[in-house]
Image (cartoon, rainbow, N blue to C red):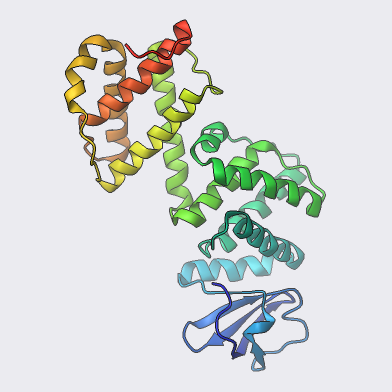
Length: 292
């Protein structure tokens, strides 16, 4: 939450030099962040919210407990850097992020950097699909990674950029990291079904592949929300005859999505999938995007 009307708050607990908990007339407990804001401060003292760089509320009790525990375990210099990192993301995107990113991204990066320091390799098999699905967030994650490398004097592998992207998208969309990870895994498996069934390797650099990835994410959005406004079933009979192979693969993919999402998928989706598959298949086999 951005700073609101100027006012005096009562300090409830000093967490470290850069963070403290204060009593707020509307939100009960709030966390104030700012360099040196907790230095020489004591519980019971008054403080102006204008002294803080950021004020936020973790309404979920479990999330609040996680954040407080994290503050005890993580070096406060790193906490300060991460607060700056989150402000960096908000400035680049021009929007406020869901406040759970203070817990999720800080905890994730602290653990990731510890693994790197111990020589553990970070692998993200879905990085490319993440980049195609969330290009704006990925670009910001790349810039953030470069900034963090300078601030922390560490080399961060490109695969980690994909994980940071998911945290950023989660804070924008309010979708959980678990759901985003599951969705990315589903998309990756759908690509594998397409490639294995078509017996081709799809060109990841081709714009039609990028469109296919985005279509799959849009499909999952429609399926999960139940909002189907397009009706392309009038093409179904034509595609079933003219693009029989891709039509059958489209249904194989639909059955996989139905199993994973436990939701019925309208037949119209088979039309869109068939068109994308046929275009990709033609490019892989003959170098032309002409469909059927």
